[in-house]
Image: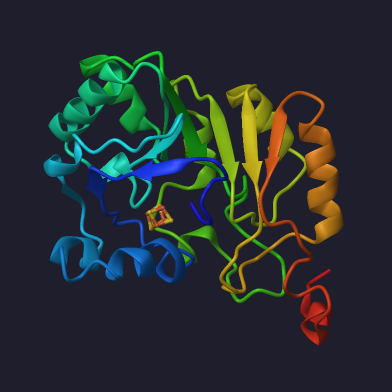
Length: 238
Ligand code: SF4
């Protein structure tokens, strides 16, 4: 996850993550660290529950629940309590997103997925190896989350995909997205200058065109890859 979603407020009864994505430190983790005064666990971004926030659901139609972290590390009973609150706010829509969608399968089995929840997965790419000028050549150097391809094989019903921060991809990405979600897709480049293995802008624009044939595409930061105007461009292997 990266820059917040327009028109969407966050609600964080659960905070923390162990996936250590390199692009998280300058974004979500930096924001969580500002809370050191209130919560040491938020500061360390350790997976933990804030039950006192269950009653403080923001006044908004659409709410990104547990945006500061990944619920893949949450205890099932914490998620059960969160789902109970969500069910009581049937006039609002809640987004839940993860990089390990098996958590949705457990949630569905134990508590059910309320009708006012939209389930999303982050799919920055469909590749595990990159051939760009970035120093990151393998997905596992960027994140400890399950490889993107493993996320695609989920049995959970996924409502939206977040391709952010976008990483280089191949021609199969639209097919994978189509097989998972027909509702909407967020897409955007990194906002924190992490020098990720980004695709060139032209390739991303073609992807957007493909996706728009079958789904709603919600654009975030769309720009040239950081390396496109740089001499390092010459370092791309043939
Ligand atoms: S999965 Fe999300 S919350 Fe966890 S480290 Fe990565 S970006 Fe941060």
